[in-house]
Image 1 (cartoon, rainbow, N blue to C red):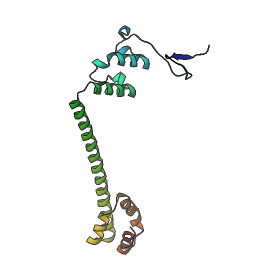
Image 2: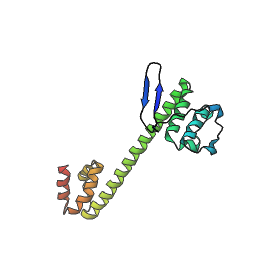
Image 3: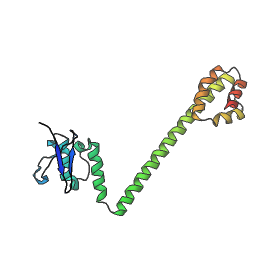
Image 4: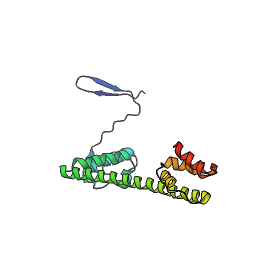
Length: 168
């Protein structure tokens, strides 16, 4: 038996040859399963369609399916006023800004930690480091600090360090 679906539109017939496509017709009022009885993805989608308007938050069983979570978030936005949508957008922007500040602070902290470590290593190896060299090292990028952390082991004097810095 060949599985074939033909969708009849007013003017044309459309054949769907995709074997993965399934159409399921459901009378929502007759769907009586509760959350604990949802056995498969179809049940979860039907439950979502029936209960979306009454859900304040995404139940864990439905949240496991990212598409259903996205659909519920969209459904919730549709019912919001313009002011609520604006507030939601501003809250999202604030969260994004905060993530950016955290990322920036983490990078600066890593750079400061690398700088302190390299300065201690250089001081232990060569003694007091002149302020001019100190300033040049502080201006290095994280990548250059990493390179200096490896390359300084090959230096025999502060002149080697100065040459290395001038190449940057």
